[in-house]
Length: 321
Image (tube, rainbow, N blue to C red):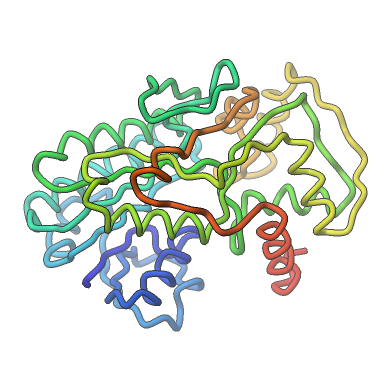
């Protein structure tokens, strides 16, 4: 099975590549000349150079693959234009190239996000049949990416995956929380609830969706099936890093101001930014994985205590903590 992965050098993409190799896929990674290859260095993969922002660079890159997993995109950016350029236009360029050069593809899988649907307003976990209401520029750009993919579902077989909060080794976003809690600081702006998924379970479910005939033209939420409060998440991570943090209460009204300071002190890759704060001001980021369980047979293996412990251990081994 010949498989192309975009975003292969990232947190989730590198784990997906490893899993595909273990399953016997012949994996090619679409990378840019400037890509950092540290997470796939030494793996038995082929590299092909291209940029989703430039359709012409993709035409010769997408032919003859059985599966294409599209993970490339931006999760943090300086402005909405950059999000749409990467997550919408980049996806459009890739799908158009596949339609033109590889119409016999077995499956095109687009990794989207719960952010594309937006938070739950009343606490009821989101379902695939709900009306998307993204609250961030990132979420709007991922939703537009979904719509672009779905416009091609009668031409090529496509599947869309919407994961919730994903954590695991190599992740730099949850790492910020691990690091703060290790230092004894717990930020609290009111009780919130989240769906979660360990990265190994995400890639397992993503591959399962590509192999399932019933997944053609469908959108799926994946999660570990539980809902966690921010207090529970804090407690589990604190236990894993061996700390007893002091809770620092932050009024939600000042969160945008903190984001502005964070952006000025950091850069566009800083997770403390205005767009992320727009998401964090909502209390229910939860989804219902029943469809993936019933139609794909997706059963997650890793619970939060085990997954967080493994993640903390990885951070320590690699001297991040």
